[in-house]
Length: 85
Image 1 (spheres, helix red, strand yellow):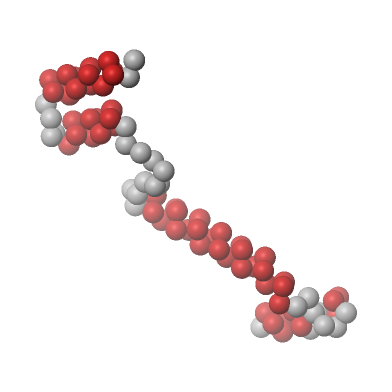
Image 2 (cartoon, rainbow, N blue to C red; image 1 turned 45 degrees about the horizontal axis):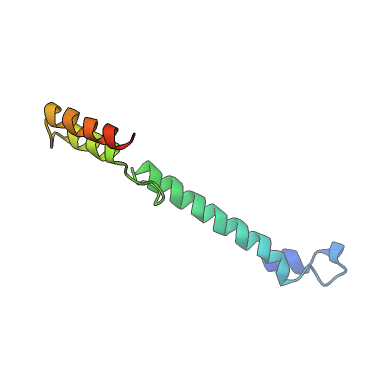
């Protein structure tokens, strides 16, 4: 159907715009698929590959999971704060 629309358009001198007219459509579909993939991945809790864990965020996560006690958390947080200065 798309080829019929392209080849029977009288505004192009009877020959139609040719196959190069499909290039913008291809780029649009490519970008659309990238956006859909990103939205689905981030909604599932995935993180972008460029996001890195800092020491503080890892420590916060371990404390939230219950891997370390509050005293251990405070002690390690203080060490990280001192190293960051």
